[in-house]
Length: 336
Ligand code: MCA
Image 1 (cartoon, rainbow, N blue to C red):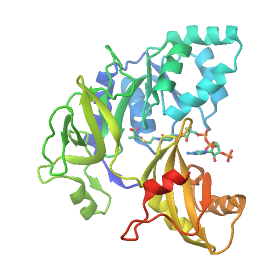
Image 2 (image 1 turned 90 degrees about the vertical axis):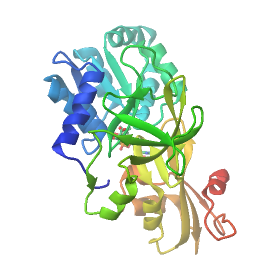
Image 3 (image 1 turned 90 degrees about the horizontal axis):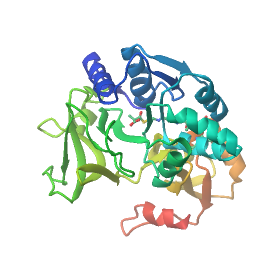
């Protein structure tokens, strides 16, 4: 989705940090269900697994039934996924008979690690998963540019709604808009320095320059605070980034495509809260004549991958705007 250039040294650091922190060994067996064009699938799962000489079984395309079959039939003991996947697994397990649920729970209790990441894990999902599997999901925080930076402990209390502490060799600071470290209890932007941090954006020297402070800290754009030593993410500093199904999606990119539709004069794309997907992509559109939702979706399907296609639409006379004429996305959200 973006050209993030990592060196071999970066990749080695990203993998070896996690292997150490999460106790990977050659006895491990995991499932490859996540896309390999993202850090989660390729570094955290495949990379760590191969580094340790462990075993990976790929399931492609992703299927809840195949995953649960592997849970029962293989010697799997490590599982990593995005919150949407845990949500889908919970829905399936809850439809099982009591005895099948019990058998699965016994099997899952034998896993040594279950991780959730790439998007905020709703506390309700964490609690349901605990009751169905016996596991507190290990939640952590990372980005394509930095690999993993924060992780709940492998041993010790995993706190719901929190992403733990800095991983070994990762320096983290939380700063205000002037890059000054904040007082404990306040919130600010997470900035990172570590051997895991990428080299540059591919052929974008200006973007690279903007992404770092003058003293070399990478600016994540994510806002956090610290509670009892545990980092807690509060969101991003942009309404234009939507998290859906574990994907980080640019609202602006979708708007650009929508505006190419012959009947769409203007539009605003936002994320609305959704239990299954985290956020659901939605669009307010201003049209020269009414458009059928189904027609619009099939037009978009030729231009965007499924996960970027808005699921909810409202047709408006005009988008909500501030005095400067800029679309006020928080007002647009309220209309949904
Ligand atoms: C798909 N559908 C959606 C969405 N995506 N609906 C609403 N919102 C969405 N985001 C619809 C499809 O159109 C389709 O509907 C139906 O759901 C099934 O689609 P399909 O693509 O088959 O979905 P799936 O196979 O069930 O996939 C769900 C998934 C997948 C496994 C959760 O989205 C996924 O792999 N997500 C993980 C992405 C990831 O790895 N992110 C990490 C990046 P219909 O049937 O009506 O057409 S972040 C990262 O790497 C950082 C560094 C980190 O920290 O981890």
